[in-house]
Image (tube, rainbow, N blue to C red; front, side, top):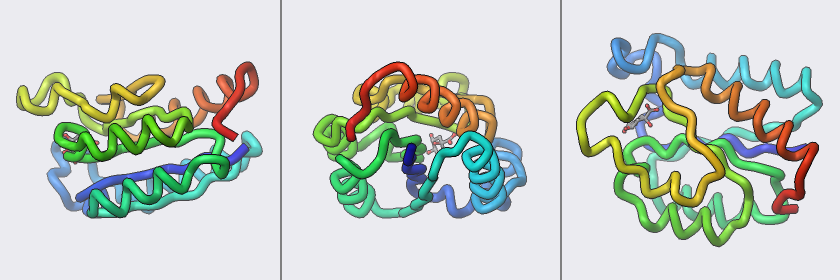
Amino acid sequence: MKILILNGPNLNMLGTREPEVYGTRTLSDIMTELKTLAVDQSIEIEHFQSNEEGVLVTRIQESHSVYDGIIFNPGAYTHTSIALLDALRASKCPCIEVHLSNIHNREPFRRRSFTAQACIGQICGLGPIGYRLALTALREMHDTKGTCR
Ligand code: DQA
């Protein structure tokens, strides 16, 4: 089983970026821990971060037939990007949206997610645990259902 972890804009700044909201762990810390969990579950994961919308669109387009699922934190593009929504719909790859913060108890503009409309589910507000839960969910769903491969 192969999963793509996609992180959008400003997530490369974790650790120093608004630590009161996003915590003090870096993206690299979070991904290293996720990799350990993936190895334990015999899942191969690939991680990709970009600050650019088009680059994320292309990466999603290329995911079809390559991955069994995507875990996606689109950052601020969550709330603005119809291009990412369309890319997710076109890819047919099961995707779980993850947010470190609880997007529902912050500014009102964060409550709307375009990208979640093409996802099988969304996890938010649980910090890095969200990525781990998403990995476990995709694993269990893969064992019981078809995938995009
Ligand atoms: C975020 C929430 C978004 O609203 C914000 O723009 C981010 C991070 C999160 O992980 O909590 O960049 O996706």
